[in-house]
Image 1 (cartoon, one colour):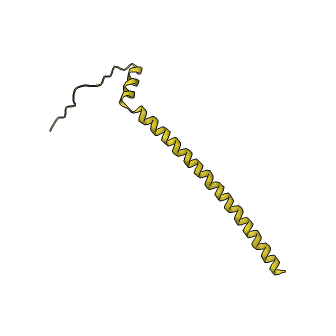
Image 2 (cartoon, one colour):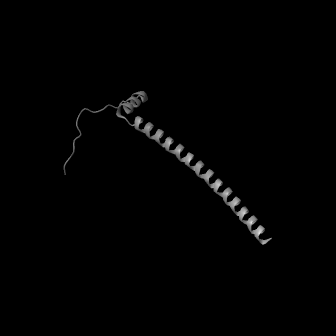
Image 3 (cartoon, helix red, strand yellow):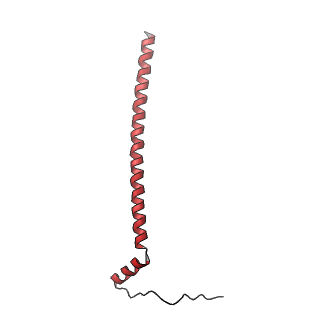
Length: 81
């Protein structure tokens, strides 16, 4: 009788352990999907920022805003101390 009880206990332990492992694997998969989504979102934002920071894009936005800023053709002067 003790042997049967021991076997039943071991079976319950195996089943509960398997259930816990399956839950952890599902959580890992969910987190990996969130990580992939975050990486793609980061890449999209980075490319948008790169596009918006190009000189031509900045000049176009300045013109659209009606600001009277112009790109200088004269070199920058440095003052020595």
